[in-house]
Image 1 (cartoon, rainbow, N blue to C red):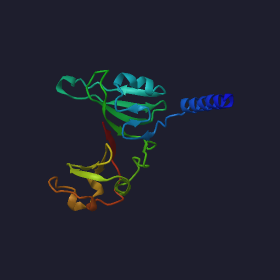
Image 2: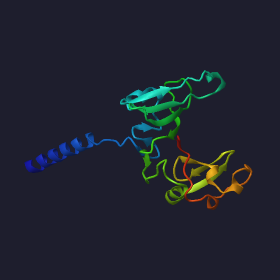
Image 3: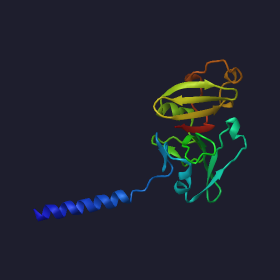
Image 4: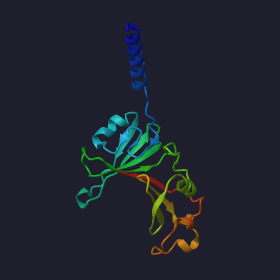
Length: 185
C-alpha cells in the first residue's frame, strides 16, 4: 500500500510539474484565443499579456462620435504583430471586439496564416458567405470566427467593379492572396 501511495505522489508531482511548465504558443490562433489573448481579455490586461512587446493606443479624438480607437501591438524590435479593436473606446474594462493579424508567424490550428491563399482557406474551412464591397471581397467561415479580405484586383476583371454582383467561391481563383486576416469575438 505504501508503494502505491509513493507512486501516486510521484505521478502527481510529475503531472503538476509538466502542466505548470507548459508554455502557450503566442502565435497560435484558435476560436477563443490568440496565444494568451482571449475573447474575454480586457484592455487593462494587455500590458501583462504583451509584457515583452510594445503597445500603441491610438487616440483619434472622435470617441463621442462613436469611433473606436485601435490598439497596435509591436515586437520590441519594431515589427507590427496585431491590431486590436476594443468594444468600447477609452474603456480599460472593454474586451477586444476584433483582431487584425499582421505578422505571418500567427497561424490557426489548421495552419492558415496571412500568407495563405483562397485555395488554402476553402480547403481548410467551410466558407459560409462572401460579401462584395467596393474594393474587396470578404469571406466568412461557418466553422470559425475568422474572416478574410481579398483585394478585388485578385479577381477576374468582370467581378471587380460591380458591387451588386453576387460573387461565388468558384469565381475566386485559388491563388488569390489574403489582404486581411481577422478574427471577430
